[in-house]
Image (cartoon, rainbow, N blue to C red; front, side, top):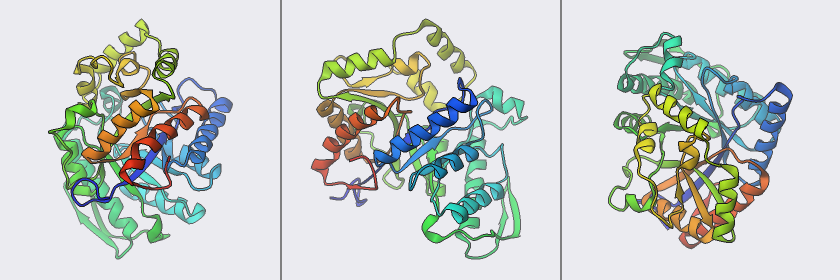
Length: 347
């Protein structure tokens, strides 16, 4: 079947790599490898690798992932303030040359205010997205390799710049970008990126479908089991309410100008019987909403997102391989009636 508008119903699913915070070297390396291999066995398309001032370098983590998997594609978070667009393109081209592995790029406009201030980047929110558009376009033009790149923008300039080694066309990176603000959505449209949203409950999208001219996806956690009560028991075991976490969440709100962060924080509690669950976010245990419930109930919610036009799903960090197996079951039930095409994904 076709999806939103005339777009084919093609689903791709990413897991998320654990952040380095709280790990020593040996345990972190081992956990990254485990999560990457779980994700590959679950047939995920790729795995998101975070970046911010407090974390190890995402490109080196991406290389670790590539070295310990056969086809999993790292989705590397890229922040313009950290490196020149030429450096990003060079890393993509080099990893493609060395490993013949496709990468995805998660283009990040902002982050914590304190991180940006420490890097002497006072650029206002919307202007950061304008900069991100130029940044992304330079990267795309360099990796396309059709001719030397000359670029004359407000933020970036290049004169007859060429990428060596050239990137094989079949390894050209997919690109994601936050679409929760108007500036982010405009940037996704301008760059051809997949606009990633931190979603509301699916029922709230009946009259608010994503822009059909932009590919769209959501960032979501899933805890599912054969029976409803089993799922909620597991959810409360994973994420007990935590007063210290609630205070940390309130502090994070003060140092972030992220649109999605504010939208989730201001959202009212989910209605009874809804699989939509914000407790992990409210207790500062994760950065996205969760869907909790039986395979059938979670599948119903996932199917509603797909029918609204969301085709890319970025899952939270999996706690174990078994949890990804349960998520497989929910996704299989969600997309089978829709006759969607899997992109080497869970299903």
